Image 1 (cartoon, helix red, strand yellow):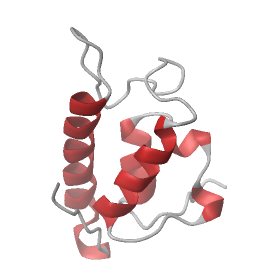
Image 2 (cartoon, helix red, strand yellow; image 1 turned 120 degrees about the vertical axis):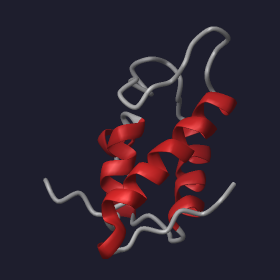
Image 3 (tube, one colour; image 1 turned 90 degrees about the horizontal axis):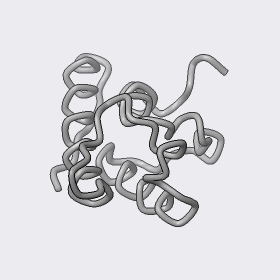
Image 4 (cartoon, rainbow, N blue to C red; image 1 turned 30 degrees about the horizontal axis):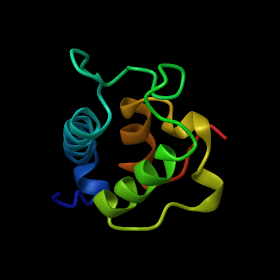
Length: 98
């Protein structure tokens, strides 16, 4: 796995890179046979991520962005889809809609 580091000057590129790498990882790790996880695939509602797998997803995300995720940002809505994960964590790890 290659680490993706987001910076203010490369936010869009970092988001796209993080999303692409995340989707590849999710599909290799969690996609059932014959199903592809897309950017907007519901991870929890779709039954792909549960209370144990979320820990692995958080750890992967932290490694990919090169920093720890703040406790306040570890919320189900921030990990609802791959697109949401990339939106929140590629830009600095804080949900600006709070």
